[in-house]
View (cartoon, helix red, strand yellow):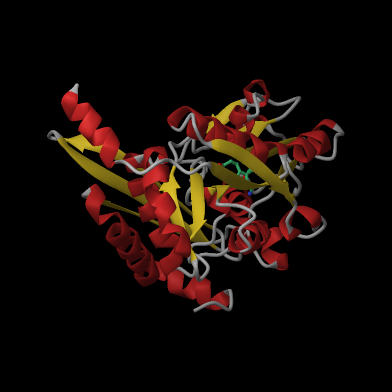
Length: 325
Ligand SMILES: NCc1[nH]cc(CCC(=O)O)c1CC(=O)O
């Protein structure tokens, strides 16, 4: 058709080659391969390769993340590769991407969300409620630990670090009676059979961005934006924008237990973004929760409003006790 041909002529040629920087964990590689395959389908003429690399966050495994400096640790080496021209983009679990993007970098696209919830995994027990007093529950996040301590004070909640395979191995070796971790990682790696129960958001409100993929580029590579745009999922992008704005307004780091989870519902034929959030003390002794509803276009505003609402309701005290703002 003449119209189609005219359109083709206007389009610039896709890049000859795209290199994706990725961590080398099995989950990170799955995610990078997923994006590579999508790019290959979108642009059959483009050579798409993956540059695997290990990060400080992968190498330091004996201390909780909050202690060694938080999220930036998992992405710095990948960003250096992009600045040095060894890679064009990086694929991350959005949950691991700092709330404030480092200078010179931006998120080019947010992929469709996998199951955003936490999962309960155990050999012996079918559900959290079935764990007896004194049972050892492992988790890698302050958020899950605070929620579990508040809800199940009779359990011993202990830190669990390492990639997914390591965490499952520690469970299987008997170091823990049960563990709680993101359902998305297990599902992506084909390990969904290990999930004994998916924890409802009412029980374990997910971390900001959990289950979503973030595609990062150097801000000086805006030429890539049109090519990466088809990877963006608008609904997921609005939801995680609200979640990340909430976290950012509360100082967003791994140092304070907080969760945020948004969904888009339809009310009277119009989309409404429903954002829930909480912030807690590490022992779960205090939890301040709240929610906001609004238009998806106002996602960032909804996130910061919810943060303000929680600050007024006691989050400020929690942050002050934490040594935060
Ligand atoms: N912090 C590590 C991490 N980063 C992303 C996921 C899971 C996948 C996702 O949330 O997209 C995990 C594992 C976990 O929290 O159990």
